Image (cartoon, rainbow, N blue to C red; front, side):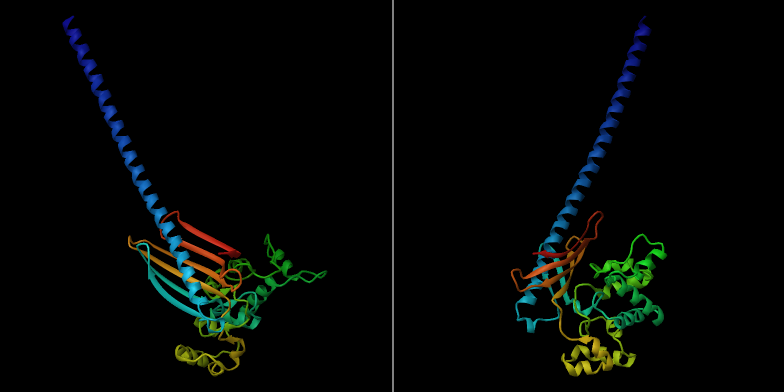
Length: 310
């Protein structure tokens, strides 16, 4: 009897020990889970904090760029500029430039579009077809006639047709029939829908855009690019372009692209591109397009719109 009782006590003690071990293991697991939760929560808060600060810094950059443009009379307004400032534990670099430095998809004549594609590596014959498709996309169909442009999209098996109206956003270029994706990707930094001008400002434009001017030669291009930083803007400078001067301009458009680069003290970075329209009416400027991002997972903001008032 005594032996049986001793065995019963040993079994009970063993059961209690196992139960305690399981409880300790469960508590350890809960502790680990809670630790991960706290870490993730802290990271999420840090992400949100940096994102909020980035948004505020971008807004401040846009306001300062608009001030730079509006503090002088319109006829003296700079076509581009740059500045830096420090705020909110971050260094901010801002560059602003008139959209006239880009080729306007809605206004550019065929010859300028062909020149742009040629400058980006396309064969001239192919460039002509690409230009035709862009013009076909933005052109309203003839009333009562056959819509030839739409029929091309149908024949290609596409579920959509051309807009038949001006480009609303440069991203529509990806939808234009027959344009190679690589060519579209290279063209993106060089085109706009906000300039409203058929000509381009050759003093602020990228070399590829200057090279796109109809009648431009490599000799004139190299000579102009080598000297334009020190040139006075005027007819004498445009004369260097020869026949290409017919598509060249020196003035800005009312739309400006503001590029913002933010470097936080914690090592994170953020960037943004905003297009604003300078308006000397009831509001100083309007936001036409807004895109910003921060180099952390799950934080990318893209906003576009027409006529968004600030």
